[in-house]
Length: 240
Image (cartoon, rainbow, N blue to C red; front, side, top):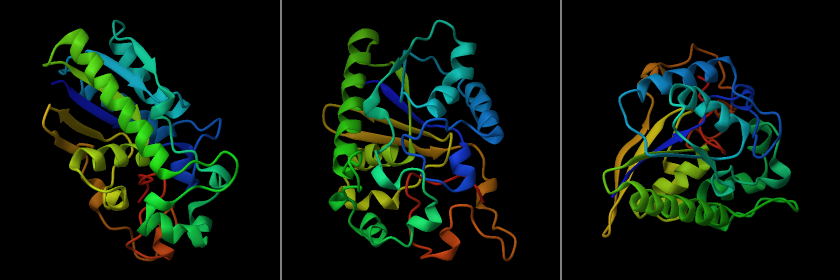
């Protein structure tokens, strides 16, 4: 069966400002994210890719742009099912502010019960279902077109990738907050007729993020002000 390289977009302007971007327009990679995208293309230089599928959101398009520039033969295909979770009325709000909302605790402890507020909000179960369905359908198509040894890449978002990883590991969605994937990290999964194999999780090739922040410095996502066991909604911001 093919090998999937599941890439989270590079650090965005929303990540660096601690905002839950969702489907907000005009969210681009910040300068650090642009460098991450260039480095990603270099990291993948020796890996043949049979296909590339991306979320339609700008920060994902910009993340794969250097890779497509280096490989003009590679065709980019867009799939809305790989787009970010639709956070409804939470979209565009600061994460530190959202942490005070009653729904935040449910998102942390029981995400399978969460439906984000507002007419545009979706449930985390819906997000997980569409993402997993997309990945498995594309994986099967890649195998039909390019064979079982093919490697392909999908570029998506933090919560989406966490949901796909949880499915691959056989975890209930309520456990997906135990998973963390940083901006521009690579997660590798191989699906087989009997079970998926998680080959790599959140690999950035950079260990600097493990260094502690200077004393008194707060995290951009506001996590330092709340429960240290809370997961960042939308995924790790990549800001220390």
